[in-house]
Image (cartoon, rainbow, N blue to C red; front, side, top):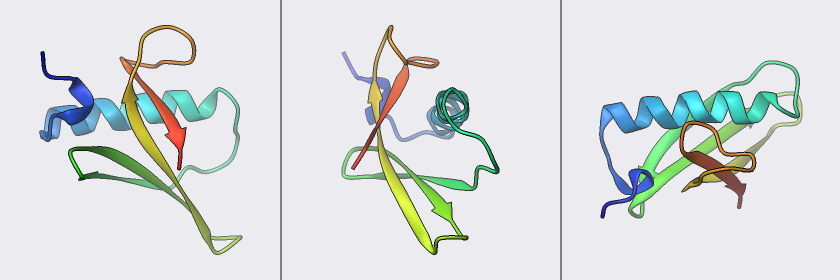
Length: 77
C-alpha cells in the first residue's frame, strides 16, 4: 500500500495544502504564507514569517484521528 504522503501528484499537493491550512488554523491566527515541496520521497510545508525574517518547516505525515486533517498531520522539523 502506498501512503498518500509519498505520492508526488498535483492532487496530493492540493490535499496537503488544504489539510495544512485547516490544521494550522486550529491553534494560530494571522496570515498564512506557505509553500509545499515534494522532496526525499514525501511532502514538506514551509511557512514564511516575514516579520521575524524566519521560516518554519513541517513534515506532512499520514494520520487519522487526533489533530489529523484530510488524512494528514504535520510535524515541525
